[in-house]
Structures are given as C-alpha cells and as structure tokens.
Image 1 (cartoon, rainbow, N blue to C red):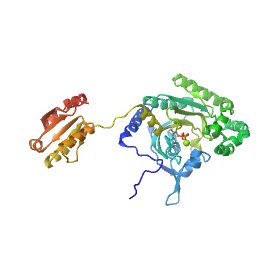
Image 2 (image 1 turned 45 degrees about the horizontal axis):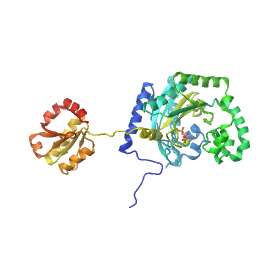
Image 3 (image 1 turned 120 degrees about the vertical axis):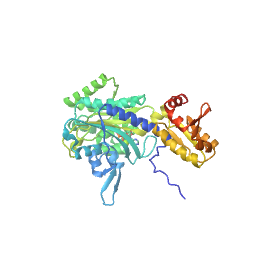
Length: 425
Ligand code: ATP
Ligand code: MG
C-alpha cells in the first residue's frame, strides 16, 4: 500500500518542536495584551474577490500564488494568503469602527500561497499579525513597529535590522511613477521578465525584485522620498524621530515599496542576517486606503505580519526548548493496581502535578526504563501488594532512593513533595 504523505510545501509541527510555537504565542499574547490589542479570528477561506481587491490583481500573491477553487455551489473561494484583508472585511461587516476611536487587533493562523517550497518558504505557513485601525497619527506607525521589535527582543532574538521607507500617498506616487518609468525604460531589456511586465502595470514593484541584475539597476533609480508632498514628508520625518526617541535603530531603504494605491506612507521590514535567502521575518506598513477600497468608510490603518516559520528557525538556532516532562511516572502491574494507578494519576493532576500513566502492562523493569526516557522525576509504583494495602512505592530516579507510603500519606505530603520534586529536577 502506498504511504500518504503531507502535501508538498506543508509541514507537520511535531511534539519535539511545538514548544517553540507555544513560546512565541505566549510571548506575543502577553505583549499584545499589555498594549491593549485584542485577538480576532477570521475564516481561513474567503471570497476570491476580497483578496483581488484587498491585495491587488497586479501582485504576485494574487496573480500567481493563490489557492483558488470553486466550491460545490460554483462560488470562487480562496484560502487566505494573508490576514489583513479578512480582518478589514470583518471590521466593516461588524461595524467595528462605529464606536469611534481606534481598533487594536491581532491575529495568528495558517496562510496559503502557491510558491516554490524551500527553507523559510512554504505553501501553508503561519503568520502572527497586528492591525492598528482608525488613526493616521505617525505615533501609530511607531507603536506598531515598536510592538514588533519588542516581541522579537523578548524572544531573545538579535541580529535583526529594521528597514523603513515612505511610499507617500497615491498622489505622490503618480509623479514618482512617471520618473521611475522614465529611468527604467532604457534598461527594459535587462530587467527580469516579471519586471518587464511590471514596467507597464506596477513599476514600483520592480524596486523590490529579487533578481540581482534588476536590483542593481533599481539601486540608482530615483528615490520616492524625493517625490513626497510636504505633509507626507512631515509624517515620515516624525516617524523617524519617534523611532529614534524610542531607541529603535533603523536604516532607510529606498527600494522598500508597496505598489498599490491603498498603501500609504510608512513601509517597513525586519530582516535577520541568520536566515539566508528568506531573510524577512516581519513586513508591514500603513494602508490608509484599504478600508475604503473594501467598502468601508475612509479609515487610516497600519499593520504588520511576522512569518512564524522564519521566526522559529531563528529560535531553534538560538536554544533548545524543553518538552513536557512528568513529575511522576506511574508504574503499575496487575488488575487492581492498574485501576488504582489510573485513579491516583487523576487525583495528582487535580493537585497540580504533571503525571504520566504507563499503559503498557509490561514488566516493572521496562516501565522504569520508559520513566527515565520520559524525563520523569520520580516513579510511583503499584503492584499487587501495594493494591492490597493501599500503599505506593515512591522512587526518586536521580538518587534511586525509595520509600513506602500509604496513598493518603502521599496526598497529604504534596506540598512537601513539590519542594522535593523541584530539588530532584
Ligand atoms: P517574501 O518577499 O519573503 O515572499 P512577502 O513580501 O511575500 O515575503 P508578506 O506578504 O509581507 O511577505 O508577509 C509577511 C511575512 O510572512 C514575510 O516577511 C515572511 O516572514 C512570511 N511569509 C510570506 N510568505 C511566506 C511563505 N511562503 N512561507 C513562509 N513564510 C512566509
Ligand atoms: Mg512573497
């Protein structure tokens, strides 16, 4: 029989590595809630038009990477390739903006893009993201960036670099777009094939092409910040000043762009030197036009998304994460003893202990071996004699010392035992 394997570009997150994921989620939850961001959970699939309008048909994501299918009712649906469009749809659908003020939201979950799988690039991957909706204040841009850098710092990550740019407003870009086309047209034949197409439909995206020759040409292109209007320039200067005030270092990267009209002002990325080709851990920026584009009222917003697979590659390089180890491993043999062990395991868990019950029915020796392998601190042993006398053997694995206690004595000793368990770790 052929063995069924996980689909190319997807990965199982096994118990040995899930600790990293839990560590990230725990740290993120804490940082988000301290900054008063609330979690939002949206569906994994949406109408295809949401992403076409929300991300733009001229982007790689929509043009090439979407998992789009017809359901049995002939509706075109798409597995979400990113989180912002769904969050904004939910915001509009539930009138979340009607309370006035800002909405501070975060999300996490799987995203789907049909890309060539490689290290740090999958077809099902995970993001954690944040959206700050309802303010155009540059402090909002900086709050969002600071939360991303705090999260990464709290996870102990170093060697990270923040790059920022401003793409101004749609109007600023009209001027710039023409200057860019004028500059790039003589190089048309030297650009990579995708960029040649973009020259007509989305020239700004040429700036972040990954093709080395195109990158070289883009280096000397006119800079968008030289085309910003006065208010856009002031916004960007304020963002930079506030970053400096917060002690967050950054570099300007004139090639960092979002090519669509609803992206405005600040664009940023956080990259790591320790990730090879897939260096970007976090990407984000301001999108003042998106809520309106998706049918809501004119509402400014800023947000970012972190790719969790890339983040976890960095965490794995840094340190090992512990897996769950039992305080007590319950070893039992014989009909009566096995039933008592099951009951005792539950009672101990109710008292807050971590307890693993051996279900093998194998010899005591084999059960002890498994207890050590699981990293247990102590074994509780029940055989026929113990079952008859309502006792247990308590065996400390580190010192191999053993004592006999009644079950009542054991339960009464739990506060003491907690100290002994800690000492025997
Ligand atoms: P890239 O240039 O690496 O393709 P992107 O610009 O498409 O990234 P965004 O849409 O800004 O990425 O998504 C934010 C983050 O999500 C990225 O910085 C990255 O960490 C992660 N990410 C994006 N696509 C993938 C993928 N296919 N596999 C794993 N992580 C991804
Ligand atoms: Mg991509």
